Length: 263
Length: 222
Image 1 (cartoon, rainbow over the protein chains, first blue to last red):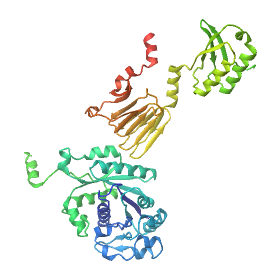
Image 2 (image 1 turned 45 degrees about the horizontal axis):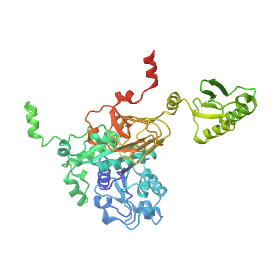
Image 3 (image 1 turned 90 degrees about the vertical axis):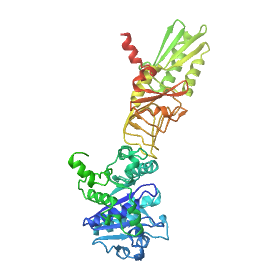
């Protein structure tokens, strides 16, 4: 029996889909059998980010309404051993499925997979209720902006009501802005939201280019964001991984100076 | 009327004092009052005009209930009611202590906590979250959202917090947006109160000046 994790945020554009794709891929790289589920019906993106758009035949709504079997709708990502995805429908809207239907689908998927990563749509309406219906736990994504933190707080409140334990990912941190005091720092956010931090992801241009190429960033180990997502994956599996040091720049020379004791 | 008497009538210099028991049911009180005035204390009623003070003890009555007592006493021609009062300060303290509720939670964005009486919240109030109380609000944690004390117009209500960073404070019907100077860098515990209709903020250690706590006076006298 696997575990279902919903990736949610309340606010749009903070990186739910990117986080879903990368955490899912990271877990697959760590040898787990993972299924990504896109519940953003009508505005599906996860397939694009994963580069699997052209392989969709059936979708979530088809499964929910019984037009196909679950196995027919699931797409296997051939780049990895055990990574699958269930795409959302693009033509319908959020009301075309019920939380019960999603719960049944997730329950079915849990039998076959170690982890089900559910990509939640923005907002707290029907789409959100659908996405959290089958989830065992949640990862709330936020960025170091007041508006995103406010919405994350609202969502954490709703998750608490549904008795779903939530952890936090802070996305798109720009260390130079945090240092100059223009951006909220990590401690401040954690203090307000008062939930466990499961990872911080630095702002990285490679994430954007990777998403456009349909390759999750995690696959490129040269990117800092990739390391961050891999760390999150390991933490989900229960490893103790220290938080990334974001402020140490361009290492080698500095490290030598430090080694010589003049740094 | 053989059971315990609920009403004691005393003669004082200014007239009569009716001491009404504060534990028995209200209806019994009215019944006994009627009975006493009409049957047993006839001698009071034949004579010159007498001033009457009614003391309710710790009982709280609405206007309607007070009016009922007045009308019963007034029915006897020569009794004139000067006052009807509950012993305010002591009973208020007791009531406050009874109604203080302790709540351990985080009030997150979009959540509203309503309470009748005083509330002690152990936890934070996040931006977008609200607390509404008819009495005082004490936050053992950070107050970053909206707090409204004295919702029903009680202007003596206060709002105290370990970390005072509210989006808005309201006491009775006074609304205040914290000006910049509240946001002092020090994280001392502070409280908000109304002084002449204006919201004031002060260090928690100054609260005794605003609240003349009767117990403290007693100790001084001793």
